[in-house]
Amino acid sequence: IMSGFIFDLDGVIVDTAKYHYQAWKQLADKIGIEFSLEQNEQLKGVSRADSLNKILEWGQKTISNETFTALMKEKNEQYLDFIATMDDNEILPDVSKVLNYLKTKKQKIALGSASKNAVQILEKVKLTHYFDAIVDGNQVTNAKPNPEVFLNAAKQINVQPEHCIVFEDSLAGIQAANIANMVSIGIGDASILAEADYVFKDFSEMSLEFIDKLINLKN
Ligand code: G6P
Ligand code: MG
Image (cartoon, rainbow, N blue to C red):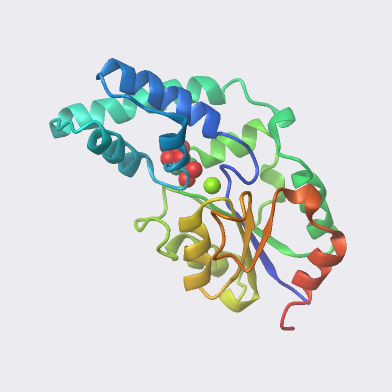
């Protein structure tokens, strides 16, 4: 019996939204655009370029391609300074417990993230060894809700999409999992993630019996 478990990174394994917020906030201040925590919420699951486009749109600002590229670079350098301070204390509740359980049950585990910094972040929190495949923003051209990232991950772990389970904190990610015909599990706010097959506040709310059910999915 074998399922594929695909984890989003930001907001599922670690809470990097606070670092994204600080880095974008600093940039927005510099170019004279207001940027709130509520707006930061809307950037969850959104690629770096799309995020900057949204911020510029909110601030009704147009800039040259050169400046756009420079600002993206600046934001990421700032973000990487925060990432450099991360360690395994930043792993979200019971993520390690679930990963361990899946390993003992010999399940396939993959990462499906929009981030181009995913490999680095997994290294910082010392979770790399759990993953049979890592698909991130460097390998994907179509952003979530396009299912490309998850279909690519399923292919790499050699599990049929119908036998894959996706853990996601963003609506776009849940939609991508649904389009891919995978079981979608929202981690976070049930009102935002209403389209998910199941929603949990975090992994500590998920029983091992439930995970067993996912392992035995349609087999
Ligand atoms: C995740 C985060 C987004 C972030 C995106 C790209 O989806 O939720 O907030 O913009 O990754 O991250 P990157 O590390 O490539 O800038
Ligand atoms: Mg996320």
